[in-house]
Picture 1 (cartoon, rainbow, N blue to C red):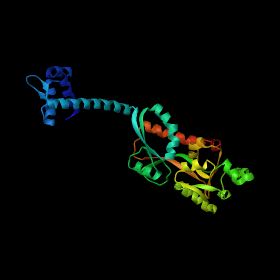
Picture 2 (picture 1 turned 135 degrees about the horizontal axis):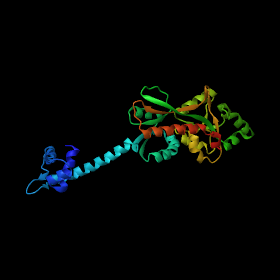
Picture 3 (picture 1 turned 120 degrees about the vertical axis):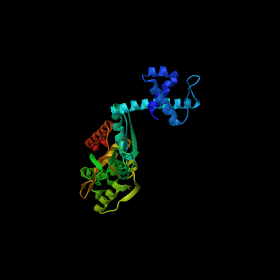
Picture 4 (picture 1 turned 90 degrees about the vertical axis):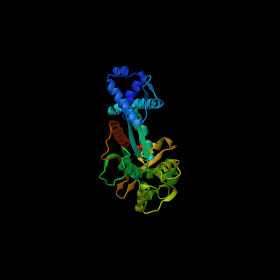
Length: 319
């Protein structure tokens, strides 16, 4: 059975006359009859009553409905494939953490949708380790990653450098250091010495970035006073920005939540023993993954977003 035979059957059902149908669709009567016979052999039932005149059998009525639906679906499929061929339709499977999704998608999706309104973007929110596994399984086109593990099946492309900051509100700084607050602020603008802030309580992160920050505390020679702990940088930022405790945030998270700040937040670059703490944010894809034109445009917008984030003045954003 093939769709061609079903098409000829549905055309014959319009006339219920072999000669007229054959002439109308420009094939021989024998060819038309052969297609009908193939269908009857395939399904194992009679589709037509031949006497006293041509008519559909009960089974033929059901096959006709099936044939008409299948033909419509095939016509739709042809249209869709034509759109895909010309990059009008498609699907992009994209993965990132919740933080990265919240920061980049409001920027790029309106621009992307304006050019490709019929292309669907399917989102997967997960950690870097999980996203890399999904990429390797072939279930994502692109993902944002913080990992630097070598894998010959992955293509990595630099997206942006995401600086990590020690963040303290103006009110907490003044409450803690009084008349020394401006001196501490000026001293820390180029890089925070954690020892200078040892008397503060901190919102501690329980994730990969949190481990890096704990190493900074260890190198500074003291154990921080914990106000709260969370694996989510968004929660630490939301609480710390209320002037309750010091917190750590990336450039991306500060930009993402700056509109919720009720007072100025001082963002001091966090410095480790080897220099500033910076997350190298990357775009990853499987080396064998074919990226459609819409997907390549989506990737281009992500890279543009990364460049724009790096160029923003963090001091202006936190005032």
